[in-house]
Image (cartoon, rainbow, N blue to C red):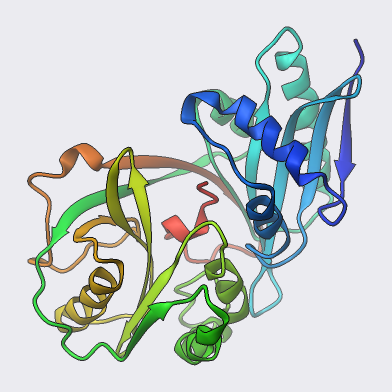
Length: 309
């Protein structure tokens, strides 16, 4: 049976077929991404159009890899390698090698200031040996029960999904664009327009709250049967009072007091109490490679930076 790797267009992709293939490949994780969710992720969720490589055995799709691309305010580009899988079977090892060789050739001809991916043990070996992703960063998602009292003057907070909130959301993230334009304070890998696209996910109800110069992004998620509020991103800076105000607003909007902090920075003392929630902790292993012009990029990756279905 013939194996081949082909490059596909996100505009003409059969998202229903891709969803079925991902469901089969990740059966142990019970993933079942609807076609419209995949279409949003590939076309809108990370800024620029992605590059998609698919592995076929004869006419059956058995694997793929997606290069999701964002452009920063200064023109530099970063790439996330996502949805990378090859079905288990007699041809899986050969299919994976063919896929990675195509990725290597593609990345060698593109200029990215940062390439990163979530890696398991098997993929991590190929990421290192073939793609040269030699650096690793753990992102610990740390749980805690919110213990802050009162909103303390959070300026604004709302779901960013409905169109009615788009104007408010643009006002909220406007300082983010100014910050990302300044090379002296590159605290984020997002610009405002791409952030708004990311937060418009049809599959999740992202929430935002701002207090002073601190902007927090959260999203309600379930871990098993337990509802949690994943603190997905922190932009800007704020003291304990600002954190209490913004985080308190997110908790009220979501009505979920169990918070998983995925920002990569510590929440001020006294706001999250974690003694009874340790079993929800999870650490993501991120492999990455900086380009020659990427040495000054922020290397604090957050939950929002990852394509976690």
